Length: 179
Image (cartoon, rainbow, N blue to C red):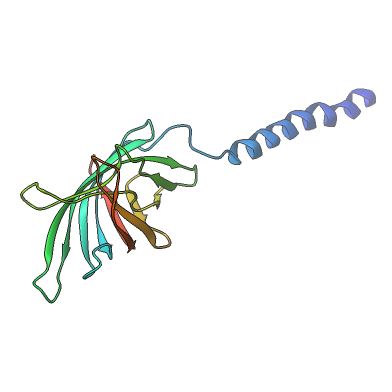
């Protein structure tokens, strides 16, 4: 009986240690094996118009495969009466198990497209956009930001030529899940 009792700690200890190692390894994983899925309405501040800062509003739509899109508008109120522009963007994203999101705007076909309210192209395509974010553990709220200021080039989508640069941009958005 005494011999069997001496073996008990080894028999119980080995599976417990193995379980502990598996938990540590799982928590060290770089990304959630699935993506974000759904639509989020966001609003916030943007300094992307070099003439005056303004408000940005829109909807981010995320697919589980790591792709998504943005559709919205920016309003700037300046000394000249302000401006209103429509924005669209296609992006790729990754999300960690902690909920940190990183965005990439591959060009072409991604990037941020800027239009006048009547649908005419205004600035063509920019090569980036807000690059960081965080989604709450329950998936109901999201924040999206540039992090450090983003250096943007305005690019002609037909030729790929740089139309003008630099545009230093800071955007901070917060929102909630729609569906």
